[in-house]
Length: 442
Ligand SMILES: Cc1cc2nc3c(=O)[nH]c(=O)nc-3n(C[C@H](O)[C@H](O)[C@H](O)COP(=O)(O)OP(=O)(O)OC[C@H]3O[C@@H](n4cnc5c(N)ncnc54)[C@H](O)[C@@H]3O)c2cc1C
Image (tube, rainbow, N blue to C red; front, side, top):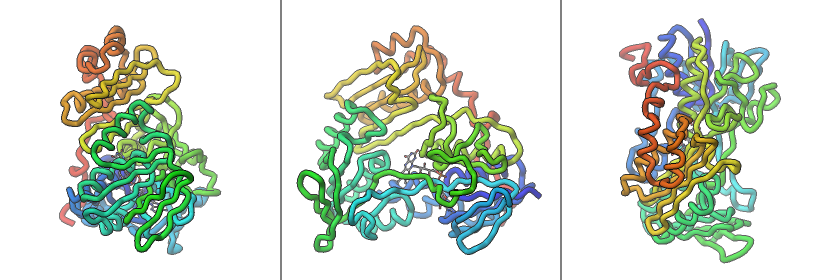
């Protein structure tokens, strides 16, 4: 019997397991090694806000894993890999032999190299355990200092404010969301947040985090200190590659994978945040540390591990976040310096659209607008569809250039839905994950 070893039980790992079972109906052995119980990091902001309970964070219960006939090593870490011998070594010394291996160990938060940043009472927000620690510290009226104004920081602003904390966001870059939107868009977002009571400091170079009578004092190269009750660091992430050093795997920013999510070692695959695979729009290798990529990678790699030679078209870079009822999104090559640009700004309505073109194809887009405006959410989906489909817009390019707020006409006229509808990740009709099980009544 073929033995698949999956290291990592996050989105990529769990989607791979379900997809293997969808195809092989239990005809292989699956072994899962995961340092945490399987859960979705993406829902942690809703847990912090109190919208969902801890039980809803998990993506697979022990019973579900039994139904999928998975042998588990939960709470164990993989610390070594020997591709020649075909074995993975765990932190308790256990050696697991595999016929093929999936590396889906995701990423970890990075802390800034300043004194005090590594203190136990300075928090990251990446794992369930860290979310629990932050939740435990948040009190109405307390002052939260968020270091970093990137995508992850923005996913938890709503929750912090809903818990009636005061919030100061400090960012080393001259603007908020520097890897997601341009300077013009950032100005709108900053103004929106300031009007709603969020203190923002951009261009702020943190130099130390010091204890201050049970609170924390943040010092900067210039400007006043910030004293806060709770400090959260959201200063970037890096793929968990340490355990793969010296294995001969081709690694750049992540594990380099081909269209089948296979590394340079034929029976070793990688998926999700740790994999560097094809970017749908740019065609180059890229790490897209986002949930949709982890999900699609997981499904494609699972099919391939089950013997179905499914090729992956590539993942669409997309960042969508809603803060205090302002929708902020960017797709694809939103920062392509060579692209032709169409844009429109209505500052009094906090509305911004930026479209990036290569010929008559939309290769990237940016959108900002209040969530309550129906055209914001409509345009969000349609712009994503136009970039994802890569459809040629012909004369509609000129129309969109002059009317970037009227996406609907071009979307419909170009037949975008008809292009997108037949596309599925695996090239066959989707099967709901819940319908996949190989053991009943366990
Ligand atoms: C607060 C927050 C909000 C987010 N919001 C969004 C969002 O709105 N949209 C979006 O697209 N993305 C979002 N993300 C990012 C998204 O969650 C990740 O891109 C996604 O989880 C990646 O899936 P993955 O399976 O590659 O890795 P992970 O989900 O990180 O899973 C990695 C797994 O590997 C295990 N592991 C790690 N090292 C080892 C080891 N050595 N041995 C064994 N097991 C190991 C871990 O315990 C875990 O089970 C958010 C993330 C966070 C933290």
